Amino acid sequence: MTPVLELADVAARYRGARADVVSDVFLAVDPGESLALVGESGAGKTTLLRLLLGLARPTAGTVRFDGEPLALRHGQQMRRFRRSVQCVFQDPYSSLDPRRRIGSIVAEPLRSLGLDTRAGAAPKVSAALETVGLPADAAERYPHEFAGGRRQRIAIARATVCEPRVLLADEPVSALDVTTRVKVVDLLAALKRERGLTLVMVSHDLSVVAALCERTAVLERGGSSNRATPHVSSAPRPSVHPPPDRQRAPLARLTPGRFSVRPRRPARQEAAAAPPEHARTSAPGRGTTPGGRS
Ligand SMILES: Nc1ncnc2c1ncn2[C@@H]1O[C@H](COP(=O)(O)OP(=O)(O)OP(=O)(O)O)[C@@H](O)[C@H]1O
Ligand SMILES: [Mg+2]
Image (cartoon, rainbow, N blue to C red; front, side, top):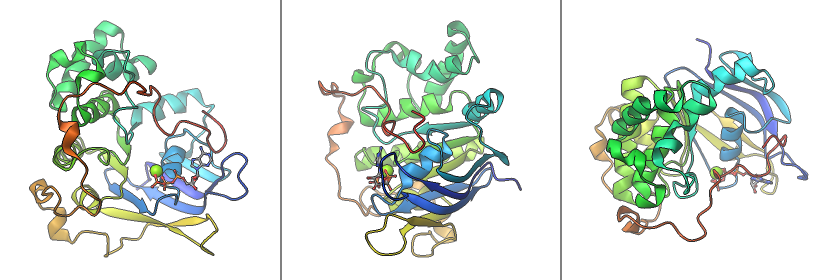
């Protein structure tokens, strides 16, 4: 089976840095599989997702999409890639433009890929909102009218509106309180099940990994403790990997707080709250990049 996404002997280094952030990375993602990327903070998980998303270029090695090297200047391939591979970021507060209505935010991939006009996009936006459990009239509202969990649903609607084959998610539920986290994990599991989505997800939360992913890639720092040269081991790790019976267990097993290895967060995000004054508009992780594309 040809992997849908592949990193072959990849290294990445940020501009001005003395050492590679990641090196010697081999990672293949098969169609329909769910892969978790785990590892300590700073190990390079987000960097790997950015490479897989084509938001950054590797300083060595190759990123492949459907078996072909990802060529960021190859318009036709990139169009197919953007339609096939979408992403959800960690922070639902900074990843939605507060000045735009939800309908316009969700329709953005359809417009940027030239798939639909504004009028043509409307039914697809309604369907995407319905899929994530939001009412159709949400399209007329603004992000600040929604709390964290519903904002993340909006981000998932935006990522899935063009029916991608692959969803890359960088800690998609870590900014949410535990109860909301369960609901969003449930939604991702349903999308995976019903659409056969391939999922690559970064998470520190082993309960989320156990609920959603069949395979785990662990980023480990290699060499001396000061060298930032992690590598990926894509073999299943029993210590992290759930036993087969738990993989098939209903998501209700994700009892709030029960499996979480992270401290419980305050439940304030359940209540609708206005965004902070300083609410940022750009998607996270789009600053300086290895290879400097953004
Ligand atoms: N824009 C950047 N410019 C320079 N260095 C960066 C940049 N982004 C990340 N780094 C560095 O690259 C390393 C890996 O960062 P990355 O964000 O990929 O780690 P991570 O595994 O996602 O961490 P976390 O779990 O905290 O999100 C870190 O040492 C970080 O400081
Ligand atoms: Mg990260």
